[in-house]
Amino acid sequence: MATLRVRPAGVLVSTRGHRVAHRRADRRLAARSDYSTNDRDVSVEKPPSDDGAKQTPVKKVVVIGGGLAGLGCLASLSGHKHINATLLESTRVLGGRVRSKAALGALAWDQGASYFTAKDPSTPFAEVLRKGRADGVVELWAGGDASPGARVGTMCTKEEAGGHVLDESSWEPFAASKELYVGVPSMAELPVFVAEKVANAVRPEASWLGDNAVPGTPEYLTNAFADRIQALRTQDTGTWPANVPHSGSDRNWGLMIRCREGGHMWYKPWESDVVVLATQAPAAAKLTAQILKSVGADGDGGNGYGIASKILAMASAADRIRGNHCWSLTVAFAEPLNLPYEGVMMKEPFDGGIAWFANNSSKPGRPEPGKGKGAQTAGWAYRWAEVGTSLTVGQGECWVVQASPEWSNERAEMSPDDAAKELCDAFLKLVGRSESEVKPVHVKAVIWKFAYPLNPAGDPSDDSKRYLFDPDLGLGACGDWTSGPRAGDAYDSGVALGRAVAEHLASELNQKETSEREGKAR
Ligand SMILES: Cc1cc2nc3c(=O)[nH]c(=O)nc-3n(C[C@H](O)[C@H](O)[C@H](O)COP(=O)(O)OP(=O)(O)OC[C@H]3O[C@@H](n4cnc5c(N)ncnc54)[C@H](O)[C@@H]3O)c2cc1C
Image 1 (cartoon, rainbow, N blue to C red):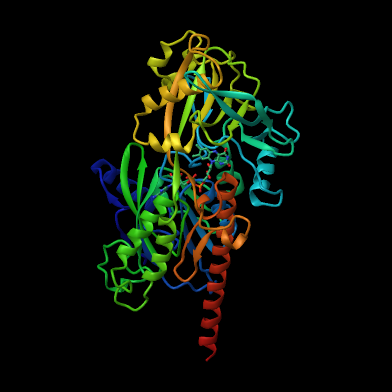
Image 2 (tube, rainbow, N blue to C red; image 1 turned 45 degrees about the vertical axis):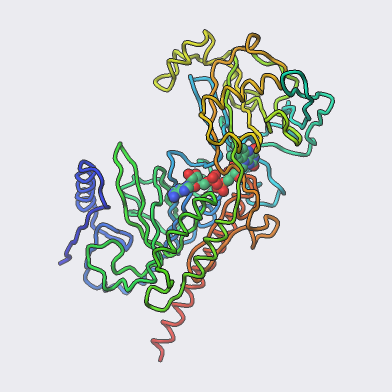
């Protein structure tokens, strides 16, 4: 008869969470009779199978970070029957620096990346943009066959009393061949599309993560922060006490995931053969430094693997990357600004303190100014402070203004309210409007720390140099910091790393099978 051994679903923080996790474990036991090797909470000693059917061995890959790099990696790991891939994203939503926000029912802004470009039609990212367009979640904003295309180009500033204004004589539109794509109805639509329609990933409840994983079908989870990573290969895991997470594991890595769900937070242990760091460079540096600590100062943990120098190489690569901050203003005006352009990239030097501004309302699929439903239908999301500012609130023209690196770096510690006020004043001055003409009804600013990498580690033009991967270690990294500073670079680097990981794991399994066959034959 089968015997069941149950251990808690994770290291629990709240007592209510503890009870919930136990109830869930009980439900799982009641509902299922077949327990795969993926069950981390339940182990079943089954009688030896007499059907002789051979189980395909499955490797586990965890992708940390749900920006475009992590999603690209997940997409290329999808469909491989020898891989169970899991993506963890620490925030509430997928997308990372491709982020959008809405307010008052009819105001919407793309707060991070403003548009997508593909370097060349043969890249994986170009393919995703085509698929997204066919599915209605991507549309052309400017260039190519956009009709009517937005007027987007570059301009210089000139100095005037009281600040810098646009020098309209310097206007140069982007070449018509430069296609600028946007997500519809927001930029944040593309990351979700990639997860669900390109990677064909499923999203389980946090406490069920991995329980019903099907090889070849990835899983993803938001509100899941990879808190700690430990190299298991350096430990004599067989000697660990039975109730310690990761005891008896033959995988390379042990992780602690901090999950949030339904108002609870708890820790869930996880194991993996390969870890992909698809985070920003500073987060990758922090995680690798912590892995290094876990293997001990001499780096071989006492059993001769000596992996510290390899981990150190990855940690130093991430640590060397420098990045600029970027303050991003989201502002809505009760009256249209009536400017003769929808997007302007300022030419350096950014004397007015602004690097880029765009009329978000001009993008396809956005709420039309003046035709919004207004604050009364905005539900709980609206803010009373804003409702009081204008009768037309919820129906304004939405603009995004991004400050220059110098302006942002100098004001990195400024309060968001002060930064929003300064940036809004600088923008109105730049475009020659005043608050008395065009009343701002929503003014907010956020700072993106490490907005762009200044010295990416790789080379976006060479597929094998878009990412870092140490197959021996089972540790890889991808993102804009290993390739180039655009969303498409990040995605393509993730795809290239995913392919390398899938290939490596397939050859590892083949080698194992060959040596087992040879062992039997001897
Ligand atoms: C203001 C701004 C404007 C931009 N404009 C454009 C543009 O117009 N066009 C363009 O092509 N590019 C633009 N970019 C650049 C582009 O957005 C980025 O290059 C790209 O999105 C980077 O993707 P990524 O996956 O490498 O990183 P990210 O998008 O930063 O994703 C990393 C993810 O990892 C998660 N994470 C970190 N640590 C952990 C952890 N421990 N556990 C779990 N998850 C974790 C983070 O929450 C994040 O979601 C812009 C960037 C900024 C900031």
